[in-house]
Image 1 (spheres, rainbow, N blue to C red):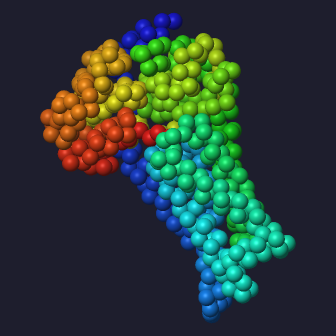
Image 2: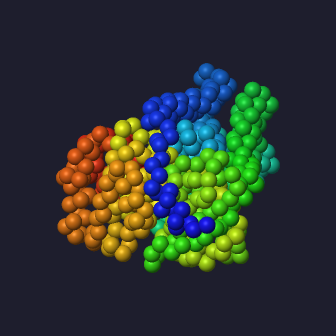
Image 3: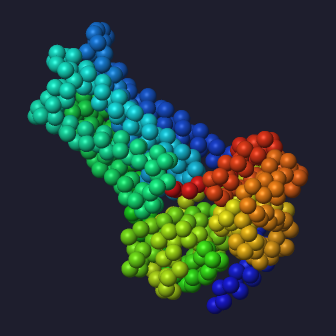
Amino acid sequence: MDIQGAVSDAARIPHEFRRPYRRRRSVDAWRALTIAGFWLGLAATLLPWWWNTPAGFLRDPATSLTAAGRITGLVAGYALLVQVLLMSRVAWLDRWLGARDLLHWHRDLGAFVVAAVVAHAAFIVLGYAKLERVGPAREIVRLLTVDKYTGMLGAFAATGILVALVLLALPALRRRMSYEVWHLLHLTSYLVLVLSVGHQFAVGQEMSAPGFSRTCSLALWCAVAAAVLWGRMIAPVRMNLRHRFRVRSVVAEGPDMVSVYIGGERLAQLPVRAGQFCRWRFLDRRNWWQAHPFSMSAAPNDEWLRLTVKVVGDHTAGLRRLRPGTRVFVEGPSGDFTADRRRQARALLIAGGSGIGPIRALLEELPPRTVVLYRARTADELVFRSELELLAEARDAQVWYVTGGRDDPGPRRAFSRRGLVELVPDLTRRDVYLCGSAGLVDATVVALRRAGVPPRQIHLDPFEF
Protein backbone atom coordinates (compact mmCIF):
# COMPACT_ATOMS: atom_id res chain seq x y z
CA MET A 1 0.00 0.00 0.00
CA ASP A 2 1.26 3.49 -0.88
CA ILE A 3 1.13 5.28 2.46
CA GLN A 4 1.82 8.73 1.06
CA GLY A 5 -0.90 8.24 -1.53
CA ALA A 6 -3.29 7.13 1.17
CA VAL A 7 -2.54 10.31 3.14
CA SER A 8 -3.34 12.47 0.14
CA ASP A 9 -6.56 10.57 -0.59
CA ALA A 10 -7.66 10.80 3.04
CA ALA A 11 -6.93 14.52 3.09
CA ARG A 12 -9.40 15.05 0.25
CA ILE A 13 -12.28 13.46 2.18
CA PRO A 14 -14.01 15.90 4.58
CA HIS A 15 -14.51 14.39 8.01
CA GLU A 16 -17.75 15.16 9.81
CA PHE A 17 -17.39 16.68 13.26
CA ARG A 18 -17.95 13.66 15.51
CA ARG A 19 -19.12 15.18 18.76
CA PRO A 20 -21.02 18.41 19.51
CA TYR A 21 -19.12 21.11 21.34
CA ARG A 22 -21.90 21.26 23.99
CA ARG A 23 -20.24 18.20 25.49
CA ARG A 24 -17.86 20.67 27.13
CA ARG A 25 -20.52 21.50 29.72
CA SER A 26 -20.47 17.96 31.07
CA VAL A 27 -16.67 18.11 31.20
CA ASP A 28 -16.87 21.28 33.30
CA ALA A 29 -19.38 19.59 35.60
CA TRP A 30 -17.13 16.57 36.12
CA ARG A 31 -14.16 18.85 36.81
CA ALA A 32 -16.13 20.81 39.40
CA LEU A 33 -17.31 17.54 41.00
CA THR A 34 -13.74 16.22 41.12
CA ILE A 35 -12.44 19.39 42.78
CA ALA A 36 -15.27 19.32 45.31
CA GLY A 37 -14.50 15.66 46.00
CA PHE A 38 -10.87 16.54 46.70
CA TRP A 39 -11.78 19.07 49.39
CA LEU A 40 -14.45 16.84 50.92
CA GLY A 41 -11.92 14.02 51.10
CA LEU A 42 -9.42 16.29 52.83
CA ALA A 43 -12.05 17.30 55.38
CA ALA A 44 -12.97 13.64 55.98
CA THR A 45 -9.28 12.84 56.52
CA LEU A 46 -9.06 15.32 59.38
CA LEU A 47 -12.28 14.24 61.10
CA PRO A 48 -10.72 11.27 62.96
CA TRP A 49 -8.19 13.59 64.60
CA TRP A 50 -11.01 15.94 65.60
CA TRP A 51 -13.08 13.12 67.07
CA ASN A 52 -10.15 11.54 68.94
CA THR A 53 -8.78 14.77 70.40
CA PRO A 54 -10.39 15.60 73.78
CA ALA A 55 -11.32 19.14 74.71
CA GLY A 56 -8.49 20.99 76.42
CA PHE A 57 -5.82 18.73 74.91
CA LEU A 58 -3.91 21.66 73.41
CA ARG A 59 -2.83 22.99 76.79
CA ASP A 60 0.84 23.82 76.15
CA PRO A 61 3.38 24.30 73.33
CA ALA A 62 4.41 20.62 73.36
CA THR A 63 0.90 19.25 72.78
CA SER A 64 0.13 22.02 70.27
CA LEU A 65 3.23 21.21 68.23
CA THR A 66 2.46 17.48 68.37
CA ALA A 67 -1.12 18.13 67.24
CA ALA A 68 0.15 20.26 64.36
CA GLY A 69 2.44 17.40 63.41
CA ARG A 70 -0.41 14.91 63.36
CA ILE A 71 -2.64 17.23 61.31
CA THR A 72 0.08 17.91 58.72
CA GLY A 73 0.83 14.18 58.63
CA LEU A 74 -2.80 13.38 57.82
CA VAL A 75 -2.87 16.12 55.18
CA ALA A 76 0.40 14.87 53.65
CA GLY A 77 -0.87 11.29 53.57
CA TYR A 78 -4.09 12.31 51.85
CA ALA A 79 -2.29 14.56 49.35
CA LEU A 80 0.11 11.71 48.55
CA LEU A 81 -2.87 9.41 47.98
CA VAL A 82 -4.37 11.91 45.50
CA GLN A 83 -0.97 12.38 43.86
CA VAL A 84 -0.70 8.65 43.24
CA LEU A 85 -4.20 8.63 41.76
CA LEU A 86 -3.22 11.47 39.39
CA MET A 87 -0.28 9.34 38.23
CA SER A 88 -2.42 6.25 37.63
CA ARG A 89 -3.27 7.11 33.97
CA VAL A 90 -6.82 5.83 34.25
CA ALA A 91 -8.82 7.02 31.25
CA TRP A 92 -11.79 8.46 33.17
CA LEU A 93 -9.56 10.86 35.13
CA ASP A 94 -8.00 12.12 31.90
CA ARG A 95 -11.48 12.74 30.47
CA TRP A 96 -12.79 14.46 33.59
CA LEU A 97 -9.91 16.82 34.30
CA GLY A 98 -8.01 16.94 31.01
CA ALA A 99 -4.33 16.17 30.53
CA ARG A 100 -3.17 19.74 31.06
CA ASP A 101 -5.08 20.17 34.32
CA LEU A 102 -3.77 16.79 35.46
CA LEU A 103 -0.22 17.98 34.77
CA HIS A 104 -0.78 21.19 36.72
CA TRP A 105 -2.38 19.34 39.62
CA HIS A 106 0.49 16.88 39.66
CA ARG A 107 3.11 19.64 39.83
CA ASP A 108 1.30 21.83 42.35
CA LEU A 109 0.24 18.95 44.56
CA GLY A 110 3.77 17.53 44.48
CA ALA A 111 5.15 20.73 45.97
CA PHE A 112 2.31 20.75 48.51
CA VAL A 113 3.07 17.14 49.54
CA VAL A 114 6.72 18.00 50.19
CA ALA A 115 5.80 21.09 52.20
CA ALA A 116 3.30 19.10 54.29
CA VAL A 117 5.77 16.26 54.88
CA VAL A 118 8.56 18.61 55.96
CA ALA A 119 6.15 20.49 58.23
CA HIS A 120 4.95 17.19 59.70
CA ALA A 121 8.49 16.07 60.48
CA ALA A 122 9.45 19.42 61.98
CA PHE A 123 6.36 19.71 64.19
CA ILE A 124 6.65 16.12 65.44
CA VAL A 125 10.35 16.45 66.27
CA LEU A 126 9.86 19.77 68.07
CA GLY A 127 6.74 18.58 69.89
CA TYR A 128 8.28 15.32 71.08
CA ALA A 129 11.50 17.13 72.04
CA LYS A 130 9.54 19.46 74.32
CA LEU A 131 7.62 16.55 75.84
CA GLU A 132 10.88 14.68 76.55
CA ARG A 133 12.72 17.89 77.54
CA VAL A 134 15.58 17.25 75.10
CA GLY A 135 17.00 19.08 72.08
CA PRO A 136 15.69 18.48 68.52
CA ALA A 137 18.88 16.70 67.40
CA ARG A 138 18.74 14.25 70.33
CA GLU A 139 15.03 13.68 69.68
CA ILE A 140 15.74 12.75 66.05
CA VAL A 141 18.27 10.16 67.23
CA ARG A 142 15.74 8.79 69.71
CA LEU A 143 13.01 8.53 67.05
CA LEU A 144 15.35 6.62 64.75
CA THR A 145 16.59 4.16 67.37
CA VAL A 146 13.71 3.41 69.77
CA ASP A 147 11.86 0.21 68.84
CA LYS A 148 8.36 1.60 69.36
CA TYR A 149 8.97 4.09 66.55
CA THR A 150 9.55 1.42 63.93
CA GLY A 151 9.08 3.00 60.52
CA MET A 152 10.68 6.34 61.38
CA LEU A 153 13.85 5.54 59.45
CA GLY A 154 11.79 4.90 56.33
CA ALA A 155 9.82 8.11 56.93
CA PHE A 156 13.00 10.20 57.12
CA ALA A 157 14.32 8.50 53.97
CA ALA A 158 11.06 9.24 52.13
CA THR A 159 11.27 12.89 53.18
CA GLY A 160 14.80 13.15 51.84
CA ILE A 161 13.83 11.62 48.50
CA LEU A 162 10.82 13.95 48.16
CA VAL A 163 12.93 17.04 48.82
CA ALA A 164 15.52 15.88 46.29
CA LEU A 165 12.81 15.32 43.65
CA VAL A 166 11.42 18.82 44.17
CA LEU A 167 14.89 20.37 43.85
CA LEU A 168 15.57 18.41 40.65
CA ALA A 169 12.22 19.56 39.26
CA LEU A 170 13.30 23.20 39.35
CA PRO A 171 13.32 24.54 35.77
CA ALA A 172 17.03 25.41 35.83
CA LEU A 173 17.94 21.80 36.67
CA ARG A 174 15.18 20.06 34.73
CA ARG A 175 16.23 21.67 31.45
CA ARG A 176 19.67 20.08 31.82
CA MET A 177 18.28 16.55 32.09
CA SER A 178 17.26 14.22 29.31
CA TYR A 179 13.73 12.84 29.32
CA GLU A 180 15.08 9.39 30.23
CA VAL A 181 16.92 10.67 33.33
CA TRP A 182 13.93 12.75 34.42
CA HIS A 183 11.59 9.77 34.07
CA LEU A 184 13.97 7.43 35.92
CA LEU A 185 14.23 9.86 38.83
CA HIS A 186 10.45 10.10 39.03
CA LEU A 187 10.19 6.35 39.41
CA THR A 188 11.75 6.75 42.87
CA SER A 189 8.42 8.28 43.92
CA TYR A 190 7.10 4.71 44.17
CA LEU A 191 9.73 4.04 46.87
CA VAL A 192 8.46 7.15 48.68
CA LEU A 193 4.97 5.71 48.44
CA VAL A 194 5.95 2.37 50.00
CA LEU A 195 7.94 3.99 52.81
CA SER A 196 5.22 6.53 53.57
CA VAL A 197 2.40 4.01 53.71
CA GLY A 198 4.43 1.78 56.02
CA HIS A 199 5.10 4.72 58.31
CA GLN A 200 1.44 5.80 58.43
CA PHE A 201 0.10 2.38 59.38
CA ALA A 202 2.98 1.58 61.75
CA VAL A 203 3.06 4.68 63.98
CA GLY A 204 0.25 6.99 62.83
CA GLN A 205 -2.08 7.53 65.80
CA GLU A 206 -5.28 7.50 63.70
CA MET A 207 -4.22 4.54 61.52
CA SER A 208 -2.00 2.25 63.59
CA ALA A 209 -4.84 0.94 65.80
CA PRO A 210 -7.76 -1.10 64.42
CA GLY A 211 -10.87 0.96 63.87
CA PHE A 212 -12.96 2.96 61.42
CA SER A 213 -10.12 5.29 60.33
CA ARG A 214 -7.71 2.46 59.63
CA THR A 215 -10.35 0.50 57.69
CA CYS A 216 -11.31 3.51 55.55
CA SER A 217 -7.66 4.36 54.87
CA LEU A 218 -6.89 0.79 53.83
CA ALA A 219 -9.92 0.80 51.53
CA LEU A 220 -8.85 4.07 49.90
CA TRP A 221 -5.27 2.89 49.38
CA CYS A 222 -6.50 -0.39 47.90
CA ALA A 223 -8.78 1.52 45.51
CA VAL A 224 -5.93 3.79 44.40
CA ALA A 225 -3.59 0.79 44.03
CA ALA A 226 -6.23 -0.87 41.83
CA ALA A 227 -6.44 2.30 39.70
CA VAL A 228 -2.65 2.32 39.25
CA LEU A 229 -2.63 -1.38 38.39
CA TRP A 230 -5.39 -0.88 35.82
CA GLY A 231 -4.13 2.35 34.28
CA ARG A 232 -0.45 1.47 34.07
CA MET A 233 -0.52 -2.30 33.50
CA ILE A 234 -3.79 -4.09 32.78
CA ALA A 235 -5.37 -1.59 30.35
CA PRO A 236 -2.18 -1.05 28.27
CA VAL A 237 -1.44 -4.79 28.04
CA ARG A 238 -5.07 -5.50 27.11
CA MET A 239 -5.01 -2.84 24.37
CA ASN A 240 -1.71 -4.02 22.90
CA LEU A 241 -2.78 -7.66 22.85
CA ARG A 242 -5.93 -6.60 21.01
CA HIS A 243 -4.33 -4.32 18.42
CA ARG A 244 -0.78 -5.76 18.04
CA PHE A 245 0.94 -2.58 16.88
CA ARG A 246 3.92 -2.72 14.51
CA VAL A 247 6.00 -0.21 12.59
CA ARG A 248 4.86 -0.03 8.95
CA SER A 249 7.11 2.66 7.56
CA VAL A 250 9.48 5.48 8.51
CA VAL A 251 9.37 8.62 6.34
CA ALA A 252 11.73 11.61 6.52
CA GLU A 253 9.66 14.79 6.49
CA GLY A 254 12.66 17.14 6.50
CA PRO A 255 16.27 17.46 7.72
CA ASP A 256 15.23 17.06 11.38
CA MET A 257 11.67 15.69 11.21
CA VAL A 258 10.62 12.07 10.85
CA SER A 259 7.23 10.34 10.68
CA VAL A 260 6.62 6.80 11.91
CA TYR A 261 3.58 4.96 10.56
CA ILE A 262 2.14 2.35 12.93
CA GLY A 263 -0.09 -0.48 11.76
CA GLY A 264 -2.14 -2.93 13.75
CA GLU A 265 -5.31 -4.95 14.03
CA ARG A 266 -8.80 -3.46 14.46
CA LEU A 267 -7.50 0.12 14.51
CA ALA A 268 -10.99 1.45 13.78
CA GLN A 269 -11.97 0.32 17.30
CA LEU A 270 -9.11 2.20 18.97
CA PRO A 271 -10.58 4.93 21.28
CA VAL A 272 -8.30 7.73 20.10
CA ARG A 273 -8.99 11.24 18.78
CA ALA A 274 -6.98 13.65 16.66
CA GLY A 275 -4.85 15.87 18.90
CA GLN A 276 -4.25 13.23 21.57
CA PHE A 277 -0.88 11.70 22.40
CA CYS A 278 0.31 8.23 23.33
CA ARG A 279 3.44 6.91 24.98
CA TRP A 280 5.30 4.82 22.40
CA ARG A 281 7.76 2.07 23.27
CA PHE A 282 9.54 0.59 20.24
CA LEU A 283 10.57 -2.96 21.09
CA ASP A 284 13.90 -3.15 19.29
CA ARG A 285 17.40 -3.52 20.71
CA ARG A 286 17.99 0.23 21.17
CA ASN A 287 14.61 1.54 22.35
CA TRP A 288 12.74 -1.20 24.25
CA TRP A 289 13.60 0.22 27.69
CA GLN A 290 12.09 3.68 27.23
CA ALA A 291 8.68 5.08 26.33
CA HIS A 292 8.17 8.63 25.07
CA PRO A 293 5.00 10.73 24.65
CA PHE A 294 4.32 11.84 21.05
CA SER A 295 1.16 13.29 19.55
CA MET A 296 -0.36 11.83 16.42
CA SER A 297 0.08 13.92 13.28
CA ALA A 298 -2.96 12.56 11.41
CA ALA A 299 -6.48 11.74 12.49
CA PRO A 300 -6.73 8.03 13.35
CA ASN A 301 -8.07 5.73 10.64
CA ASP A 302 -8.52 1.99 10.19
CA GLU A 303 -5.23 1.61 8.26
CA TRP A 304 -2.50 3.25 10.36
CA LEU A 305 -1.50 5.74 13.05
CA ARG A 306 1.17 8.34 12.43
CA LEU A 307 3.46 10.18 14.82
CA THR A 308 5.85 12.89 13.65
CA VAL A 309 8.76 13.99 15.84
CA LYS A 310 11.61 16.43 15.70
CA VAL A 311 15.07 14.91 16.02
CA VAL A 312 16.52 16.50 19.16
CA GLY A 313 18.34 13.64 20.93
CA ASP A 314 19.54 10.06 20.76
CA HIS A 315 16.09 8.51 21.05
CA THR A 316 14.41 10.60 18.35
CA ALA A 317 17.46 10.18 16.10
CA GLY A 318 17.14 6.43 16.56
CA LEU A 319 13.58 6.47 15.22
CA ARG A 320 15.01 6.99 11.75
CA ARG A 321 16.56 3.49 11.97
CA LEU A 322 13.36 1.67 12.95
CA ARG A 323 12.64 -1.29 10.71
CA PRO A 324 9.20 -2.22 9.36
CA GLY A 325 7.70 -4.99 11.48
CA THR A 326 9.19 -3.73 14.76
CA ARG A 327 6.69 -4.30 17.54
CA VAL A 328 5.37 -1.23 19.37
CA PHE A 329 3.93 -1.09 22.87
CA VAL A 330 1.48 1.81 23.12
CA GLU A 331 0.07 3.43 26.27
CA GLY A 332 -2.82 5.85 26.05
CA PRO A 333 -4.37 7.70 24.44
CA SER A 334 -4.14 10.76 26.65
CA GLY A 335 -4.89 14.44 26.35
CA ASP A 336 -7.84 16.75 25.82
CA PHE A 337 -6.38 18.74 22.92
CA THR A 338 -9.31 17.52 20.87
CA ALA A 339 -12.09 18.90 18.70
CA ASP A 340 -14.84 17.95 21.14
CA ARG A 341 -13.47 20.41 23.72
CA ARG A 342 -14.36 23.49 21.66
CA ARG A 343 -17.00 25.97 22.76
CA GLN A 344 -17.46 27.97 19.56
CA ALA A 345 -18.58 26.99 16.07
CA ARG A 346 -15.22 27.88 14.48
CA ALA A 347 -11.57 27.46 15.38
CA LEU A 348 -8.09 28.90 14.90
CA LEU A 349 -5.15 26.48 14.89
CA ILE A 350 -1.68 27.86 15.66
CA ALA A 351 1.42 25.69 15.25
CA GLY A 352 5.12 26.31 15.64
CA GLY A 353 7.79 23.89 14.41
CA SER A 354 7.04 20.29 15.35
CA GLY A 355 3.77 21.44 16.90
CA ILE A 356 2.26 21.12 13.44
CA GLY A 357 1.71 17.39 14.08
CA PRO A 358 -1.36 17.52 16.36
CA ILE A 359 -2.55 20.70 14.63
CA ARG A 360 -2.57 18.98 11.22
CA ALA A 361 -4.48 16.05 12.77
CA LEU A 362 -7.04 18.38 14.35
CA LEU A 363 -7.76 20.05 11.02
CA GLU A 364 -9.39 16.79 9.88
CA GLU A 365 -11.93 16.80 12.72
CA LEU A 366 -12.78 20.50 13.05
CA PRO A 367 -15.67 22.09 11.12
CA PRO A 368 -15.29 24.08 7.86
CA ARG A 369 -13.77 27.58 7.77
CA THR A 370 -11.04 26.74 10.26
CA VAL A 371 -7.94 28.98 10.07
CA VAL A 372 -4.42 27.56 10.45
CA LEU A 373 -1.43 29.75 11.36
CA TYR A 374 1.84 27.85 10.86
CA ARG A 375 5.13 29.32 12.15
CA ALA A 376 8.57 28.16 10.98
CA ARG A 377 12.01 29.73 10.62
CA THR A 378 12.32 29.01 6.90
CA ALA A 379 10.08 27.72 4.13
CA ASP A 380 12.16 24.52 3.98
CA GLU A 381 11.09 23.70 7.55
CA LEU A 382 7.39 23.67 6.68
CA VAL A 383 6.24 20.04 6.78
CA PHE A 384 2.89 18.60 5.63
CA ARG A 385 2.47 21.59 3.35
CA SER A 386 0.79 19.61 0.57
CA GLU A 387 -1.44 17.80 3.08
CA LEU A 388 -2.46 21.06 4.72
CA GLU A 389 -3.37 22.60 1.38
CA LEU A 390 -5.38 19.55 0.33
CA LEU A 391 -7.24 19.56 3.62
CA ALA A 392 -7.80 23.31 3.39
CA GLU A 393 -9.34 22.90 -0.06
CA ALA A 394 -11.55 20.03 1.07
CA ARG A 395 -12.71 21.70 4.29
CA ASP A 396 -12.97 25.32 3.15
CA ALA A 397 -10.16 26.27 5.53
CA GLN A 398 -7.41 28.88 5.35
CA VAL A 399 -3.72 28.22 5.94
CA TRP A 400 -1.29 31.06 6.67
CA TYR A 401 2.48 30.42 6.67
CA VAL A 402 4.64 32.73 8.78
CA THR A 403 8.39 32.30 8.23
CA GLY A 404 11.42 34.22 9.44
CA GLY A 405 13.52 34.82 12.51
CA ARG A 406 12.08 35.57 15.92
CA ASP A 407 12.81 39.30 15.58
CA ASP A 408 11.82 39.67 11.91
CA PRO A 409 8.95 42.14 11.29
CA GLY A 410 6.63 39.54 9.70
CA PRO A 411 6.48 37.02 12.56
CA ARG A 412 6.46 39.76 15.21
CA ARG A 413 3.46 41.43 13.60
CA ALA A 414 1.58 38.20 12.83
CA PHE A 415 1.72 37.05 16.46
CA SER A 416 0.84 40.41 17.98
CA ARG A 417 -2.65 41.33 19.11
CA ARG A 418 -3.18 43.52 16.06
CA GLY A 419 -1.74 40.97 13.65
CA LEU A 420 -3.93 38.14 14.92
CA VAL A 421 -7.06 40.28 14.64
CA GLU A 422 -6.11 41.31 11.09
CA LEU A 423 -5.63 37.68 10.02
CA VAL A 424 -8.71 36.42 11.90
CA PRO A 425 -11.26 39.26 12.37
CA ASP A 426 -13.70 37.04 14.31
CA LEU A 427 -10.92 35.85 16.64
CA THR A 428 -12.94 36.23 19.86
CA ARG A 429 -15.67 33.97 18.46
CA ARG A 430 -13.30 31.09 17.82
CA ASP A 431 -11.63 28.42 19.90
CA VAL A 432 -7.84 28.64 19.60
CA TYR A 433 -5.69 25.49 19.61
CA LEU A 434 -2.02 26.26 20.18
CA CYS A 435 0.98 23.94 20.00
CA GLY A 436 4.66 24.86 19.73
CA SER A 437 7.70 25.91 21.72
CA ALA A 438 7.25 27.38 25.20
CA GLY A 439 8.30 30.83 23.99
CA LEU A 440 5.82 30.83 21.12
CA VAL A 441 3.01 29.53 23.31
CA ASP A 442 3.57 32.05 26.11
CA ALA A 443 3.83 35.04 23.79
CA THR A 444 0.81 34.01 21.73
CA VAL A 445 -1.38 33.42 24.79
CA VAL A 446 -0.57 36.96 25.96
CA ALA A 447 -1.52 38.35 22.51
CA LEU A 448 -4.74 36.32 22.45
CA ARG A 449 -5.76 37.53 25.89
CA ARG A 450 -5.06 41.13 24.89
CA ALA A 451 -7.23 40.58 21.83
CA GLY A 452 -10.11 39.56 24.10
CA VAL A 453 -10.11 35.77 23.67
CA PRO A 454 -11.50 34.19 26.89
CA PRO A 455 -9.17 31.70 28.63
CA ARG A 456 -11.74 28.89 28.27
CA GLN A 457 -11.45 29.20 24.46
CA ILE A 458 -7.66 28.74 24.47
CA HIS A 459 -6.52 25.11 24.31
CA LEU A 460 -2.87 24.19 24.85
CA ASP A 461 -1.24 20.89 24.01
CA PRO A 462 0.33 19.51 27.22
CA PHE A 463 3.86 18.17 27.16
CA GLU A 464 4.91 15.69 29.82
CA PHE A 465 8.45 17.07 30.08
